[in-house]
Amino acid sequence: MKARRIQPARYGLFLFAALWVLVLLPLSAIAAPYAAYVIDARTGKEIHAENADTRLHPASLTKMMTLYIAFQAVERGEISLDTQVTISKNAASEPPSKLGMRPGQKIALRYLIRAAAVKSANDAATAIGEAIGGSEAAFARRMNRTAKQLGMTRTTFKNMHGLTESGHLSTARDMTRMGRHLLYDYPQYYNLFSRITADAGVRKVSHTNRRFLGSYKGADGIKTGYTRAAGFNLTASAERGNERIIVTVFGGKSTASRNAKVAELMDLGFRRAPSSAPLRKPVPPVYADVETAPGAAGKTIRLVGAVTTSKRPQLRPRSDVGVVATAAAPEATSVVSNSDITAALREAVETAPTPPAAAPTPEAKEAEVVIAAAKASPRPEPRPKDVTLAVQQAVEQEIVTRVSTSGGRHWGVNVGRFPSRYAAEKVLLKTALAEMSTLDGTLRKVVRRPQGFDANFLGMSRESADLACRRLAARNVSCFMIGPSEG
Image 1 (cartoon, helix red, strand yellow):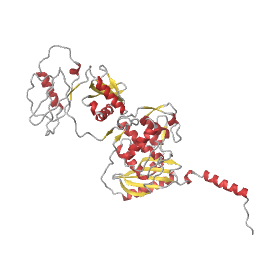
Image 2 (cartoon, one colour):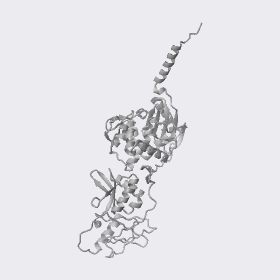
Image 3 (tube, helix red, strand yellow):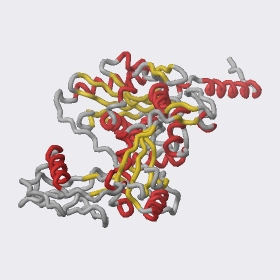
Image 4 (cartoon, helix red, strand yellow):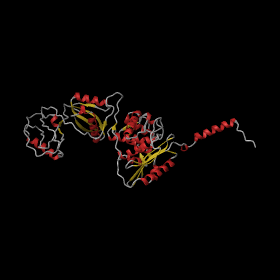
């Protein structure tokens, strides 16, 4: 029996049909590279790894870093949860998943954070990045700086949402590390990742990870991701008793198969993890947020904890107030109580001679005493010539007093308005440490306004205020001068 010969025309049609079937295959049938990593969250110890250091497409796992920086920016006073963010054309044009906002629309940052964390909205993630970084490129550079500080050595970010882009790559190990930092560095926000639904301002949104959260005992986060190039990704965390496991899977074939694999690895983690283990939280990264234009002075403002030493306050010459100041004794260890300070000041004022009748000066009205030493021993009677304020000195312990003022004839600078006194004070401290040469000796003062809390440095000459503003502007720190009647 002769074999049937396929005609050339029919053969061409067969090839075309085969190619068309491949194009129409379900996305779940397109296999992406697989990787997995499992750790004990309490210690960071590795439990399981497979292709954990292979650089792959992270998809929306990227948003973990976007949200991490958003939490950092809120904590540091760069932006507040109530800040009204204007949606750009770039953000509004992002493909789904999205919240569906219009260009020019304003929405509070808190709603953008919810949309990015719960719905994995690309337009919300882009708007967050633009609001904090100024542009997608600038925010991506900050993402990469932060990734290095977190030890994510094989990660490179090109955008804030995770849509496929050349060079935008990460690993299962790095994303697990990212998830652990989210959990321990910002526990006050971590509940976002377990919300099945959330109010995103313009509408209610549902969690992309709700199936796993609802099916696996103890699951409380963290983030899903999907693109055709990446496959179905998930960084998940679950807690049972004293144990907590974090799992990352790259390259799942479908939501169901990915969730099943993550559950299998979670079970593996809980079996192998010890019932009790010391909690060793990861070290938060160095704060590095401010980036200036190329060539400008002061590329980045960095703060590493508290300062280890403090300069002795320098007294400014005064004609109307006399101050006696001495350095604190090295062996002084206790702290002066508020009642001791109040009693000393009352005693000094009551025994001081009455000055001639004259209009009170603004400086005397706003004199502030800063105590920076240890509790004093019994004090001698103040002498009349020690006017208004006296520093009581003991044999072994001494009190340092410093007079600062925001008097009407003095100038100052404002470095921003913030939603809370706490945020304003933190920015004042950060700025003072970053620009000690021009702000040393000034008075940090938070002024409550109807719209928020102003962060001011006062007690400056006009020249020093102008210099301070110019130097802060070089660091991309918002600043304007305050005249004598504005402090």
